[in-house]
Length: 103
Image (cartoon, rainbow, N blue to C red; front, side, top):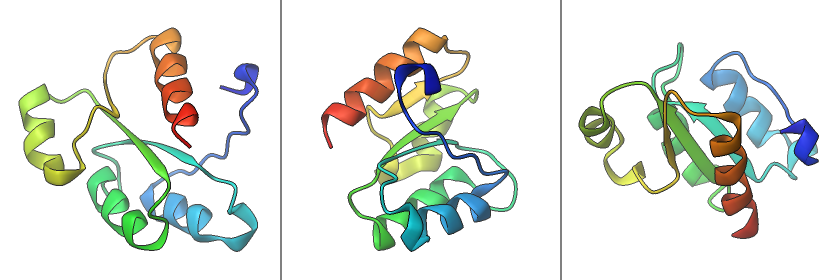
């Protein structure tokens, strides 16, 4: 993503990601890439909380779980902004470009 000109911030878990996204010094965060099943705060929980505090942030969820299980876990947060694992760097780049164009 850095090679495509994006600034990348990393978080070890959902709690850190939420803190980063809600930090006033990071108001320029526009896209969040997050696995559905991660420690401390699952991707769905993070998406729910971010929708309250940062309603305009684009959220790209990923998962290696079966597609139907992801749809059930994500409920209203499942959208075309989902990337099934395994995915290539070009797939990720294409999806990020789509989301960036919508900002």
